[in-house]
Length: 91
Image (tube, rainbow, N blue to C red; front, side, top):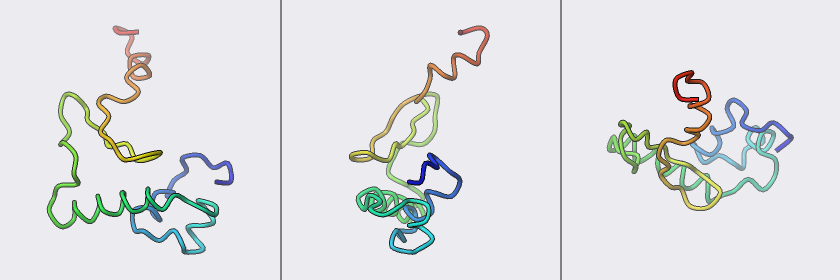
């Protein structure tokens, strides 16, 4: 992926399922994961159609949907150790 890492706008081709467009290939490189695009696109369409993307609403447990690699899954309080490092009363 051209060494860009998690660059701004990279998710757009996955959300709108347009991985085959030249603009998307310029960001993702060839062979972007189709399964990821399918899962992310389904979640956005489901959210637009019903208001429910398919995972729990935000609450004190901080649920986040993690997409790829593998099947999407809910992760609770991701990167908590990093957050704790910014809190002088916890770290």
